[in-house]
Length: 202
Image 1 (spheres, rainbow, N blue to C red):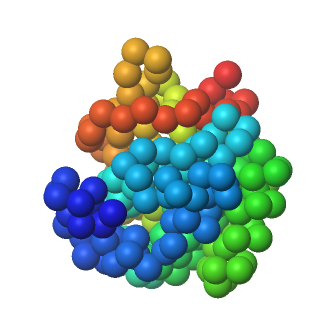
Image 2: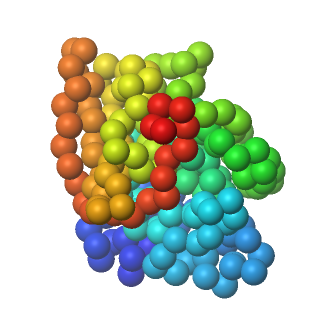
């Protein structure tokens, strides 16, 4: 998976590549889907949610430019796979899931895997997690027409936010960097994500 899907497509951050070698993706997949765990595609996990394609996980995390001491907020825990990868790359990971059943399952798998730096929260991801802010990195695993204002507000100076933005007609990853109170945006690859659910995007 790492060699054929990530390295050959240009993922260059060796820390990201190593983290994705280490985290067993199959343990986060539903039992009937485990044979697909390392395929080049998303995997349904229930509640109309998915584990993102491995390449998209790598692209988004690489854009965060993590060095090891950061506090990261993930919106959309899903299975917990991306949070497990992030736990190898940052000091603290807070991950928010709006479906209690997915949050409970992810919490259990992360505990079994030994990811003590990950905290799974049941909440509206559009609101972020203000009581633990600011974050050096924010990664959003669902798409909306715009970036919810609370997420921008919770980004630390020098921090980076990565989120798919767009609608049914098309989505692109947007990378936001906060510098001295201003937000600098750049666009990256095209993508397709499930919709972000929450009060701020309805």
